[in-house]
Each structure stands twice: as structure tokens, then as C-alpha cells.
Image (cartoon, rainbow, N blue to C red; front, side):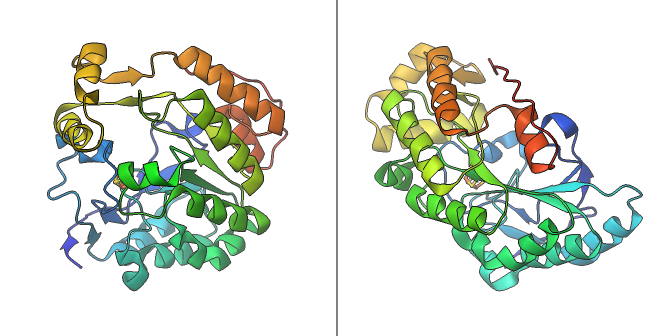
Length: 295
Ligand code: SF4
């Protein structure tokens, strides 16, 4: 594995309480090999060279341990917002597993974003942390259709494997749900697929589904996405250009109606979708079930 120098690992989560109640955040790898065609982390503004090849961070676990020791306040540490921490290198190098051991040792909670069922390898540590602190796992699932997930997220396990992983985690008492983000306009935004995704979420025991019903596009991320549209979805690039021009925020055209479909289906199955409720639930506080809209 190639390494990059990182002076620090842990930083304060600036959206804090509003974003899954996360207090600190870290990425143990730089870059990601899952190949999602819509990935925002590929954008130039993050200055990640050769993004599709994940690199480790030099002395990551030593640095992390020193930083954890210095924190006066314990809290929930978010892992993997810029790079899936369960990329294939993790099988051998176990940076994430090592970090979970440290979080457990120093009594921090954890929030993990992933698309990979490799997370199941660490279920022992997640249970250990869960027994004394807060744990939330956010599986990104953008489509209930495996064939489509192979195209839009080509180098990670298909959606059905992610639902299976959610089932295993929830069966083991780990609070797990779905980030249905992004929703790709004209690709993953059919009412039928959203209903199917919610039903599969229910079958797998998912506790929540969070979605902002759209995607963001900027600079080279847009260029890469459009190249992939030309390759796999002929004519769609032109439709995007007509609909969104150079806009950063690209909600699906009927986002209000679709969000209502999502929330109605979630209500039917008792799945949370409001951020405040999700945070209260995994932090084991009372849920008031207040619901807000995102757009
Ligand atoms: S898993 Fe996340 S970081 Fe990795 S390529 Fe996909 S969107 Fe990007």
C-alpha cells in the first residue's frame, strides 16, 4: 500500500449535532477504489491525487491514539465520509479495525459510512463499542437493483449484499440504516424503485433511511460523471445539461413528491427518516418522531 503523510487524523465535525450527532471525524485512507460514478470526493477541491487508488495514512493508528488521549470530551467519531474505510486494502492492512480497537479502548462511540460488507469482519468490535457507547452504521444504497448498482458503484458489493449486511448488523443489535444518497436524476429516481428500496430496508431491519433526493455536481466530478453517462446511459448527459446547466445542487425534478413517497413508505414500516429522530434513536434517547423536510 502507498502511504501519504498526515499530521493529524481526527478533526472536529463542523456540522456536529446536525449530522448524525457526530463529534469528531476521520478518514483512515485517502482516495477510494469503489468507483462510484457520482463520487463527490473525486472533486478537484479536495486535492486528492489519483483518487481511485486508496492510500494509507502514515502512522495513522499511533497518531490517532495520541489524539484520542488528548481529547477532554469523549464523543462519537465518524469514519469514512471522504473514502470508504472498508476498501479492499483494509482486508490486509486493518487500519479501520485498529482504529475501532482504539475507540473501544478509550471509550468513544463510532459512526461508519460504508458500502462494503467487509464491515461484518469487525462485528465483534462494533458490539463491544455498542455495549458501552453509541454506534451507528450508515450503508449507502442508491438503488434496489443489483444490475444498476454494478454500473453506478462498480467495484463494491451489490445492493442485495448490502441489505444482507444490514440484516446481520441489526440482528446483532447494531443500529444500522441507509443513506439513500445521492438520488441520481432520471436513473435512480423512480417511485417504484424507492418503494422497493424501503420494503427491502424493512425486510433487512434497517432503522432509518436518509435522503436529500438529489445529487451535487461540480467541476471534474461532473466531467467524470458525464463520461460515465455517455458510456452507460446514452443521451442522459444532454438531459442533465438542459435541466441543471452548471448548477451544484441537482435535486431530482419531482423531489417533493418523491420525498413524500419515501416518507409515506417509511411511516408504513416504522422506519425513521428525520435526522433528529435518527440521532435520538441511536443515542438511545426518546424519539419524538417530529418530521422535517430537507428541501
Ligand atoms: S464509496 Fe464513497 S468515496 Fe468511495 S467512490 Fe463511492 S462515493 Fe466515492
